[in-house]
Image (tube, rainbow, N blue to C red):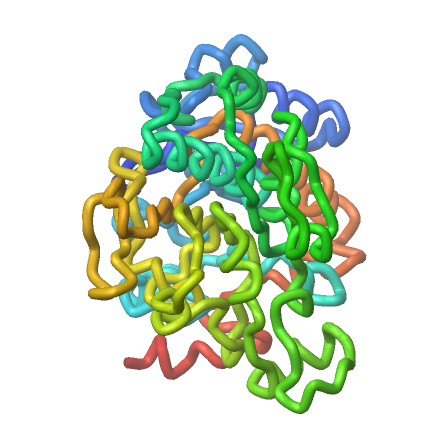
Length: 400
């Protein structure tokens, strides 16, 4: 039966998250007594080495006896152990040039690579990820950005607070004016945004009310793709048509931007889809957005104000619609942008616990039921020193 190893995260900047917390490993071993675990020591992980030892889990620098090695971010090439199964976010499946050598090394070392992004069900829907916590932290950061920009309240950064409950408690103490907040996306990220806003008492309203009424309290509306996109021929079909023929659509988001103060972007953006708002849109009279929390963070993409990713240390910058240039975040003529691209790192304990629950539900059983649902087969990128059929499209990327 497989033995599992928990890797030390070695990527810079350091990531404090982990696939399994100490209590989660204990749960795995209770449900699957045949499973064994070793944990590589780490001085940056959110859970201490001692916390694992207290659960009776071996902490050791030697993981060579483990069959399956579990990490979060990319493993440096010189730390890859040949002939093992690895799970981590490899950032190779979109042919990212900066990780070509990593995938080449994985093939050379006869490693079976599974990317957390490639763990999908039969309908190709992703099963695990940190998206929910990106939404939670991104929503918090968006409200924090508004307070700083308007100079009406100052609250701690999310990473200075212990957990999601602390974020909610902190936001409940502020006096938010009657702002209108748009949320795009109804997946995991959108769910995280919605739960945070609801938890702090911000009321959700229909898009019709949002567009046509004024309120004496903060409100938000959550939009799906067809709420802010329409076919160019004005014929209404369904969401599948949008996904299949995105080039036939145009954005109608501007109507929301003219009545909103804050925009929280938690959508998935597909190739060929129309930009949500363009640089020209942002120049229009009446374009009212003051803060954009771009949690999806597609740089120079569908959200015109996202010129670059920002960092946990310096999360905010300004976008001047007139010059299309970056300015100070509190410049009154600017849109204040929050575009941190590793938001779940700000809540490492909560994010790790949530991730571990999904990994236990969807992935671990596949090692003990002969992969009856095809989870491992679909996720496997490399095998026997070659790309699997599902990922053969990466061959030219590997060969370059």
